[in-house]
Image (cartoon, rainbow, N blue to C red; front, top):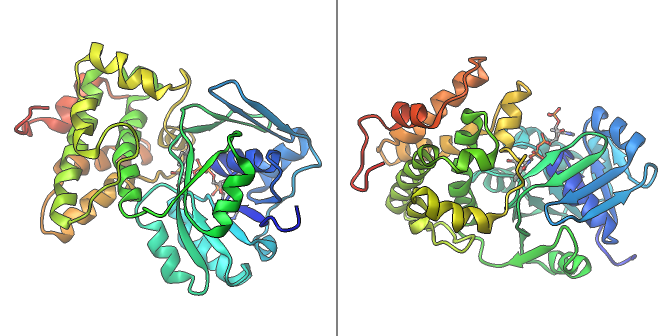
Length: 345
Ligand SMILES: NC(=O)c1ccc[n+]([C@@H]2O[C@H](COP(=O)([O-])OP(=O)(O)OC[C@H]3O[C@@H](n4cnc5c(N)ncnc54)[C@H](OP(=O)(O)O)[C@@H]3O)[C@@H](O)[C@H]2O)c1
């Protein structure tokens, strides 16, 4: 136990409590830094981690080291950063102040700019890319539920290899890789569904069963792929489908999509994107760090990304309090009107 690295989950909400809970249950030394409300819940109920395959792990109250102050970072060999992208800069300041130089900082966040921001702000730390390819929802009473299949990824280091080995094939399984180029953009392509799901007001399964929503997602993917090609960025292949083919697969006719990709994805019927949860809770979303990054990259190349721009605008409206659940056809007409590309939307 002594030679295992101590891992602090900084920004312990859905992702931090799920992964941290699973890793502690697998025998790793773990602590959590998050908000008082999360601590109060865990003090009462402990942490329960469940997943779509029926796994259920429980850490009883009293067994969880959950603090609310960043000074707890001082004991960490590994800082697993799980704050939303809007909070990265503030979190980096705290890591710089309290973290131990030489510690590994794994960004488990979505978005393509967090690792770069952290590297710039944290010289002397080993900042590495992580990736969470599944959805986690907070189910109250100390329970966090993984509602989509998939395994965690982190850049290979001797320490991340040791963590992966300790967890083995248990819940919270970690795959290490040295091929991180394009990983964040590969994930962003998939995350382009988040905004459409949030705008739909539906569960992921309901939304994905509707081809009109999927056509909007496919159009935003196609636009992103074109911009990435211009920028010379090659997004990584994260699932069974190569990035170039993703828009075709997503926009496939219903019977094909439902019986292949949707079935293979194994999504919990209640799961929604975390952006949907943010809107429901009146919180700022990560839209600037997802579709917004495509718009930003396009601008830097003196190009336009009208599909992603339209989606960003709708999410900003929703953030500002416009309560509207977009139907599939309605969203497709609004976002894609007059923009039929060579493949049709
Ligand atoms: N949830 C998912 O299904 C999912 C899946 C894949 C990837 N991700 C990515 O993972 C990242 C985290 O998402 P999440 O859903 O876990 O977010 P979350 O549930 O909001 O958890 C983040 C927690 O960190 C807290 N926090 C922020 N700054 C802090 C600080 N300086 N000190 C202590 N606590 C702090 C937040 O509190 P406040 O809310 O009070 O700020 C919140 O409780 C995001 O980049 C997201 O895109 C999420």
